Amino acid sequence: MTTALPPLTAEHVQRFHEEGFFVLEDVLGSHDLQSLRADCQRFVDLRDAEMDRLGVDRLQLDHRGRRYFVHAYGHSQAAQEFLFSDLMATIARTTLWGSKTGHSWAGRGFASGEGGVAGRIAGS
Image (cartoon, rainbow, N blue to C red; front, side):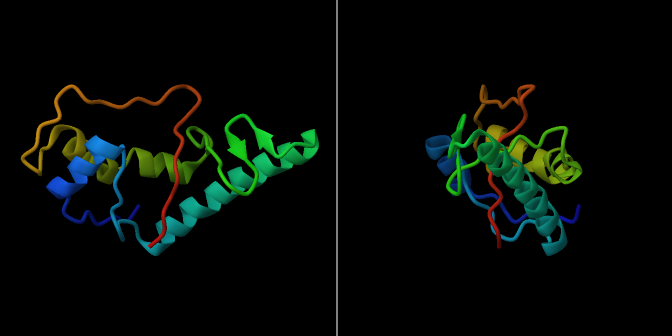
């Protein structure tokens, strides 16, 4: 996976602390981004097919055409490579423990359950 980590700022860390997320623009190359998007679309299509089969527009937390929680962990090589990449490790360390920003968020952590990791991939 081709990655380039832009500088994480104190504002990124603060936004994560206050809102639970931040956006890093242009971190993934277009090939890697397309691969992740294709896998996510595959999972969305599978959920839509299951909703069709059941005759519903909502299935658990998924809402047809509006919101999907993609459980790709263990089912997507692209997601696996992305989630366990050096890039994600650096982002997590920097955001949670402040290794590059001078901030310290000791005591914060993250986990992934057996059900997988939910996420949204924003484009560049």
